[in-house]
Each structure stands twice: as structure tokens, then as C-alpha cells.
Length: 330
Image (cartoon, rainbow, N blue to C red; front, side):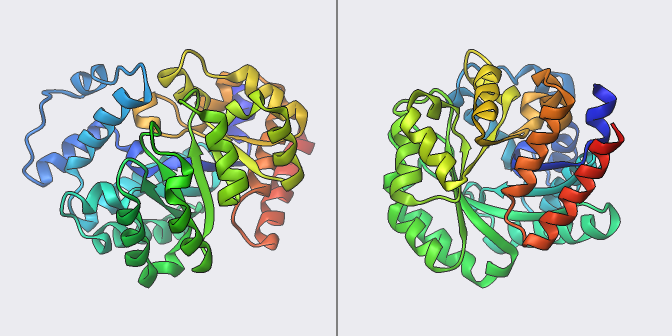
């Protein structure tokens, strides 16, 4: 099964580029930028990656970003992920980035996006991996800051396929960002939104995202199973859920594999992704292995992923043909 998964053409739709910052690269960038880290070794950094909730994870996550300062830093960060993705036969990825996590500490938006964009272009020509960027707003900042970030992104609109919403969900419901999302829709951005696993008011947040905001897909979202009517609505709209089993196991009591299994059986376009793999010790290959699903189900998961990408139909069909050819070889 490991070999089957390794050869499977893959699509990743829930991946935070800042969450791919491996300890080795963190040390390299700290040295480049003259930053002293509170760790003496890679092993010490990995030992600090002990989380029991979304909040404890985010504290370490944002601390790690301090080494990202220049355009080459963001280029190297993205290229490191894209090389790893290529090694796991990820054919296409839609990559989250958090501009406010950088602009709030003095790193200009332009520096962030130019480094990432250059890496995406090089990866397509050098590695054969296509990728697009999704700009996320940090939900624990003010909605006004999100709107300002949205306006700042407009000169780079051709480089950004859509917007998302992440970070600490407590007290920060989708409704807080309704005006921001409406403006993003008017600007032509596609819409997604984190509805993290087992948070306060999880189901209500999914309802707001689906019914009030009108997102094109939902990130995480396994708690929708608590509301069969909402499941039916997601099915009717053909919305996809971008689930991340290994990260679920770090910030909740389980990987939610049974829930993912049920969603798949119900026909929901559920997908499997790695979220923040440098912190959760698992890229997309490892997440797929963790499921212990059949070959047929693994192919269905990838079919779901390619179907809900924000790509033109002809590109989707090309990837699906590649997937079908692989499945037919058995």
C-alpha cells in the first residue's frame, strides 16, 4: 500500500506554506538573517513541537516565522515544500500563505508574495508541480485589518486564486469577516474558510461559512457530521472538505478517520491534506497512509481533490486522466 500511495498522482489543497518550515531550514534562515534561536539543535526544536490544542500549536507556529525576513527566505521556504511535494508525486497544490503574520512584524506584502510566486514558477518548470496561492486572513486580528490586507493584495490579484481564513477560531466566527468576503468575491477571488475540528460552535461556524458567506469549499469541517441537514446542503452544493488527519491527532483527541470515512461513504467531496507538515510530522503521503483505506478509496479521495481544485476544466481533466490511468494499472 505504501508503494501504491507513493505512485498515486496527488493533489493537496490544505497546506500552509509557513507550516512547512522544517527545523533545518529554520536554522539556515536564522543564520542568514542574524537571528538567535532559543534552541541549540534540530532535535531541540522538534522536541518543542508538543501540542495538545490549536492554541498551543499556534504559539509555536508564529514564533517560528520570525526567521522569514527577505524575498529569498520565502522563495527557499516554498521551494523546499515543492521539492518534497514532487518527491511524493503531488501533481498540483493550492498553497495557503498568511501575509498578516509577516506584515504585522514589518515584512512588506510585496516581499512575501514575490518570493512565493517565483518559487511557484520555478517549481512548474523544474519539478513539474503546478501550484496556486490562497491568501489567508488571520481571524484573531480585526476584520478591518483583513480588509486592508485584501485591498493591499489587489495589485497582485493575478497571482492569487482565492482567500481563506485561519488561526484561532475562539470568538472569531465567519460572520466577523462577512464584509471582507463579500468584497473578495466582488474582486473575483474564490472563497474558502477554516472550520477547525472540535472548536467551540464548530457546526454553527460551518453553517455560517456555507449559508451566510457562501464559500466554495470548507477547510477541515469534519464536525458537519453533527448536523445531517448541513451535510445534505454540502452534498447538494458539491462543496469539498479539505481534511488533515495527522494534524487532527495533534490538536484534538483523534485523527477523525472514522468521520472522514463516513463523509466519503456519504459522497461528500472529502480530501486528504497535510496542513502544517513540518510541525505535525507528516506530508500528504504519510496522511494517506494513516487512513488505512483501500486502493479504490484512495483513488476516490484524489478524484475528489482534483475535482474541487480551482483550476480550469481542461486542466482538471488532464489530472483526472492521469489518475485513471494509474488506477487502471492496478
